[in-house]
Image 1 (cartoon, rainbow over the protein chains, first blue to last red):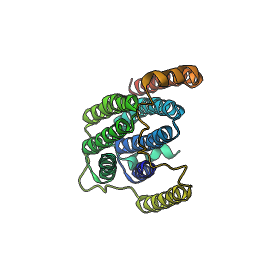
Image 2: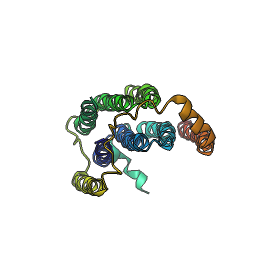
Image 3: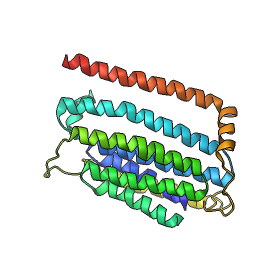
Image 4: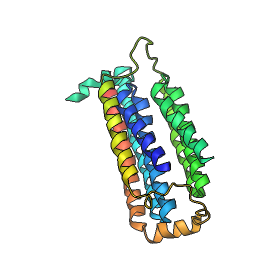
Length: 95
Length: 167
């Protein structure tokens, strides 16, 4: 059941990243994806009595925090440029 | 109990797709993360539950809520809620859920134990875990510090770029 929850959380997060227009909501959906991965890791850790799962969960914590620490300033810069959170406004990033 | 919190996490995740205001999405995400923390606690991994609440709900979500209040960009109500990729996104979502679900379904049941195994509690104390962390997995731990330094430098670089642009 927990594996199913993990799959559902990851897929819903991915759907949110693709579908939503608001940049901050996309970031939150990425956090949701990482949480889904964490649930799968904890499930494997409890089932196999392996501590490696917990170590990986901690690494995912760190990666999530570092990702936000970089992504939020970038979003702040973009908002200051375009006065909008809509990702359609950022299309000049296409290059 | 496990089912209750799993359902709560799912409801929060689904609500994240439909709510319009970023603050409400953040509250739904906090609900989801809190329920996941409760699930960790119910599985007997108490230190992970504590860190889930401390780091995710405590640090990350407070950060996000703070940024939402800081930005306060009003969306026009006429703006569409979803991007042009709505149909491909839903198709990809269905395919992904199908592939993952089938692959989990086909795995022999011995390898996919249903999580709520009785008696698997109290085995994961902090001491056992931290010993394993710092003795067997010290290299990932050290690499984490490199990652954090890189993140700090990158954040500073972003701030520097913005200063240069705006004088």
